[in-house]
Amino acid sequence: MSSKTLKRIAAALERLAPPPPQAPDFDATEAFVWHVEPDRLEPVPQVSGVALRLLVGVDRSRDTLLENTLQFARGLPANNALLWGARGMGKSSLVKAVHAEVQAQGLPLKLVELQREDLPSVARLLNLLRVRPERFVLFCDDLSFSHDDQHYKSLKAVLDGGIEGRPDNVIFYATSNRRHLMPRDMIENERSSAINPSEAVEEKVSLSDRFGLWLGFHACDQDQFLAMIRGYCTAFGIDIPEERLRAEAIEWQATRGARSGRVAWQFVTDLAGREGVRLTQG
Image 1: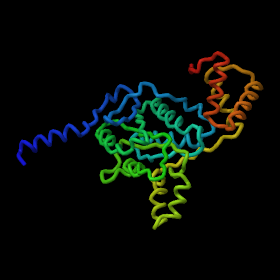
Image 2: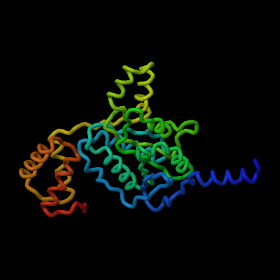
Image 3: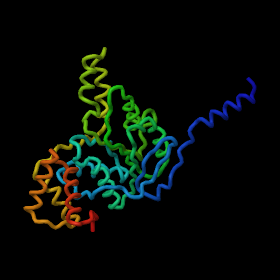
Image 4: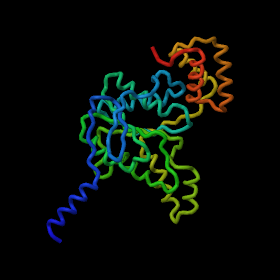
């Protein structure tokens, strides 16, 4: 094969290969979303979230995650964190609120959201962030894996870092409804059908063991549910008699068949609309 032909093949391969991701202006904003095809970090001008003080009933998880994040932002050792448990109890809101609180304390920290479907590209993202002087929280919301889903193997690159190790300026936070990130029936099927069931189960269950922090979120009781609503009403200036607020809130949660931070916020949104109040904090 001639050298001319080899050069043409090399040029064709270069055109097929995806271009290396370009670093954005990290000083322009404090949050980004990672996209692929092509690889890029998309700036987020304004992160949607609530103030840390409005998250009621998650005091222990709030304090633990905040302290861990402050340690990391100060350049000290810190753990990857898995926030797991009941839906609608503020797991993703807590991550964003903690990031905002760290920013408010004058510590530079960037938040990068990563979708579960893009986990196979995480090595490329880490290579982009590894050389940066900033510190980054990689955030994957609603993380879980189904049967024959191999994306969980890519997650190990974030948690363990492979032969290079996880970059010192990167930490990983994930939220999930599942403590072990896998459906219970999937784990039970492995136990019953695998040739080496203990090894198959250990490989999947051990994934969550790679998180240094496990923060559990559980369904709230009625007092906590009402406290959430009162906190929102105070913060947004919704003036309503206590008896009416309690009666309408209880009726709302009864129609929904659930109590959670999400249901509380949905009630406050409805209430604010009926009272003609805009949901903007003063």
